[in-house]
Image 1 (cartoon, rainbow, N blue to C red):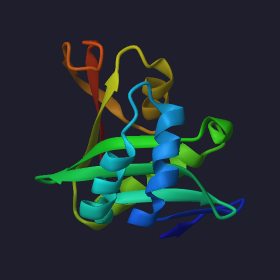
Image 2 (spheres, rainbow, N blue to C red):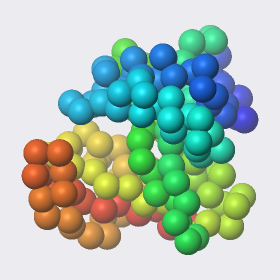
Image 3 (spheres, rainbow, N blue to C red):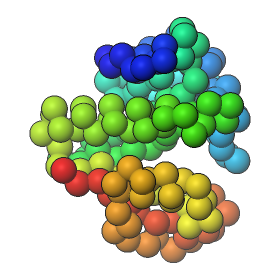
Length: 150
């Protein structure tokens, strides 16, 4: 899909990627998606699921769904050992490019109000807070709706 500097490649995911994607989920989220959920997404939503490889090894992924003319970013994750090196930005740039190529007007996601790193990441990637959803998070925390608009 997209070649990046330093041995990185963003490509469409496939069901064979499920074990590595599920392993990254375990490293990145307090409530990771199970292997079965990852495999189901990869089997049914592969046109909206990408992975990023560094020298042939998957180190991150992003997946989204389409609602009207908006992409809803369901997941974005990068292995902790390569965070802060532009891998997440590359994934998000690929999602935004795909959104523009398919005439979508925005990309939305929900971020826990407690996850300052994620909030700062999305802000740095030109997402803006557009709403607050009380008690919607995993431990009843509030979720901040973030939006990138072209």
